[in-house]
Length: 307
Ligand SMILES: Cc1cc2nc3c(=O)[nH]c(=O)nc-3n(C[C@H](O)[C@H](O)[C@H](O)COP(=O)(O)OP(=O)(O)OC[C@H]3O[C@@H](n4cnc5c(N)ncnc54)[C@H](O)[C@@H]3O)c2cc1C
Image (cartoon, rainbow, N blue to C red; front, top):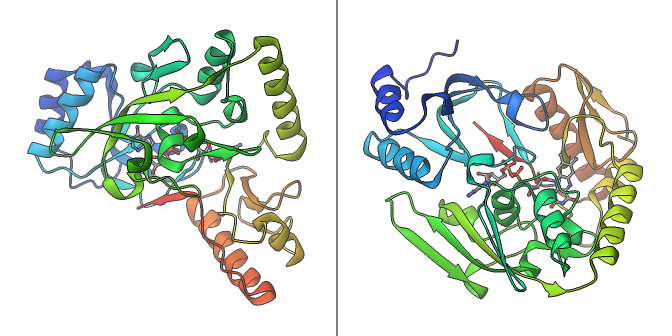
């Protein structure tokens, strides 16, 4: 058990009065909820089953001044081994409703991107094919402005609703979303995305399905999808590819403990089994220092490191 300061029994009791107690887990191993399958624990994990539960949790955590953070599907996160002394609100299945109206989709943030791309295809809507193999939730994808194969979330998002820490709502659209390469306004605003509006184009559902299956085949061929990772570990530096720089520095296959620079795709750090967060961070540091020496390029992690 962790030595947590932020969470006490009375807080958990208060939360349990407002929500299904099975949606609360104290001293939770976050490796279960992250695609790296590594890292430390959190003092409390909250998995809201509805908007009402999310709002209640935010209200109580705010009133009690408990530190908290939000996560989606955990496919771009690494919790340090020391863990997170606060509450992690995991937005998933409980907040994953999707409504389609013509070419517009309204979706809650917990829906998986793969599922959303499938729903778009069923409605003969094109524009989201690029996202079908990104293993994140919609909320995490908007937060990161996730992208692949020439598409980015910013191409299809026309509006968002978010919950501020003070309990107020904030709606945004168009340029107010301030999307950049793997970035959005939400990385600065510290809000919880609760609704997303996407605009797609009418297309042919068979063609959309074919494109998605081709992209997934490409992904399976080029990426080490069978081992735990958080995808590309580093952001793409301007004018370069991180994987290529790492390979040119002779680091492909380099291992620290259970963490390894993937021999298949040097842009990925994979967990070969039993990696600690520290193994991954030590390997990250070696890669950054060596690439800086050999090519003069400073690699920045795309993965969000917590703790
Ligand atoms: C095998 C593999 C392949 C990948 N391929 C790609 C790829 O092709 N392109 C790409 O861009 N990424 C890729 N990724 C990385 C990752 O899937 C994306 O960054 C994804 O968008 C993260 O979504 P998530 O729900 O898992 O977010 P998490 O990892 O849970 O969280 C990421 C960040 O988003 C924030 N966040 C999550 N939900 C919310 C919310 N509702 N409100 C506010 N903030 C929120 C969190 O606080 C955190 O800072 C890959 C990862 C893996 C493991």
